[in-house]
Each structure stands twice: as structure tokens, then as C-alpha cells.
Image 1 (cartoon, rainbow, N blue to C red):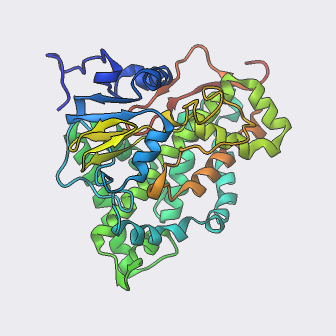
Image 2: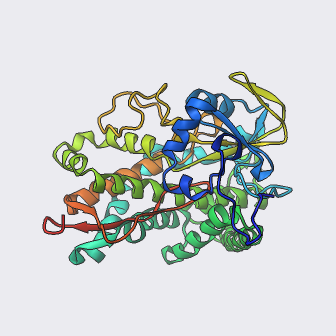
Length: 405
């Protein structure tokens, strides 16, 4: 278990090289200086917290571990204060070869560009409906009133469940991926509630199939055999969790950046063809997702020994800030030409939903700039960030209109 003080608070990090903690407020609020320091002094840090875990910060080290499925297992993908046995299953992301490939093949056809293009028009309508609700006020919380609602409503529509259930989804994800990293009881409560909800939806599709993701997952086959309910449930847990928190964070971070750097917003309005390049740069610079591996065999990465039994936090956001891979890595350059970022992971577990995430992020920023080209952060209210597996802004207070900014 993670060490705690007598009053139950987490002890602050004293040395990031030997005692790192991604739940420390300094990481939550501004992790970039931490990664820069480690990259130059201790590129693969270790901590005894979380029952032992490594933290690589260089792109080449993160890549090497992500591709090494023999020594680094995906059966555990979250660094927690505790370890569940068996760990929660969300295939294919928690599957290793050879099982992984067949499981991924079930989901890949559901997220090809042609399928995602079908839902782009309704995503644009949704973005405008959300903006309509606060347009006359001259202010909003771009994270709470806009970015969080885009992915939750899109994935609800794709799954074929009520869009009004979105607040439930967000609560469960918060309990599982954020608070639940420190509190097993809360994590189990969130997981149990999500399981009951999705299991009920699976049963409905057995009697009355629909044209939605739940039906398509339930109908999936491996070697001619239908998926078990357990596998289908695990896949749906993945789609629900991965389809909301990550994209909410990416949209929020892009708007946060544009509010802080109005010249970039003005340039995107004047040069709309630059949008796709800018989106990739936002994904690189503000990548929201870290993912974990369990060390199942002792290894050596760049001369650094990695002991079995530990966890590894694959900090893709840190890899994306590595100056050895990206010139001017800490600058956000919206016309960056070469950008082989790791925001969607590396190796066999590269994000299945990357096409969906890119579409939602692109549409959300495009529609915002069409309606609100001039905006800034509200200096009277703080920006806040999430902690844990997914880091993104959870409150982005915005003022808009020329008079406000």
C-alpha cells in the first residue's frame, strides 16, 4: 500500500527519482517540469509507492516497453495503491498476445473512418446545441458545460443507451479511474454499478438486436464462436470508459490552450486548413492518457534494470515532451510538420478509438471557433485538473466576446 501519514494524507514527494507519485498535486497541476528534470537526471525513475513502480520519461524507453509484450504484461493497465486479483478485464486493452489480436479485430471495424464519418453531422449539431445554452451569457465553464458533454453524448448514441445517462457514466469513470486509484471500495462500487448497467443492456440486445455498438459487440465472434457475456461486458466497459474521459480531457485542454494563446485561435480562424495539424499538436502537447504495464519478467531498458513484480507507468504525455523526439518539445507549434506523437499509445495497444477521438476533438474545436472566435480565461476563477490515469482540465472558466477579453 502507499505510505500515508497519521492523518490519512498522502505524503508529498520528496525526490521524484526515488519516490514519484502521479497523484501528487504538483504532478496534477503542472507535470512538465517534473518530466524534464527526470529525463535529464533519472530517465527511468522508481518508487516504492504502489507496491513498486517505474516511470520512464524518454520516448525511446516508453516505446521499447510498450512494444515488449513478453516482459511487460497488459493484464494490469492502471497503477493503483492496491492490486486486485484478478485485475479488472477490459479487453482487448488488458489482453496480451496471442489472445489480443482476435479480440481487437472485433472492435476495429466499428471505428474505421467510414463509420466515424456517419456520426460527424450529429456531433456538429450536438456541439452547437451545447453552445446555444451559454452563448448569451458571455461566460461558461468550457470543461463542464462543453467538453465533457461532447464525448459522453456521442458514445451514448453509439452504444444505443439514453443520452441522459451521461452523468452516471461520468460518475462511474471518476470512481474507477480517479478516486478509485486510492480507494478500493469506491472503485468497486463504481465498477459494480457500471457492470449492472451494461449487463442489463446486453440482455436487452439478446432479445431485440439493434443497430448499435452493444449489439455489434454482443454479436462478435472468435473462431466462429459468439463472445461470452463476460468478454462482451469487458469490451463495453472499455468503450464506455475510454470513450469519455480521454476525449473530454483532450477537448478541454485544446480550449484551455487557445484561451491562453489567442494568437493560435486567431490563426485557426484565419487558416482553417491548419486545423488537422493543430489537432495533432494539441494531442501531442496535452496528451491526457498514461497507461500501465506489469513487469512479469526482469528486463533491462537502456541499461536500467527493471525488476519483475513491479508496475510501469507508461507516461505517453512525458514521451510526447521528449526533446530528443520533438524539437522545441515544450512549445505548442500548431503547424508542426512531423509529429509522431504517442497520445494514442504505442505498439499493439494503440487506441482503437483514435478516429473517433480525432473527429470529436476536431469538430468540437471547429464549432467553438465558429461561434466563439474571441475568448479568454476568466482571471477570477481557477482552472482545475484531474488526477490519475487521465489528466485533463476539469474546470476551464471562459469569458468571451471582445468586451470581455
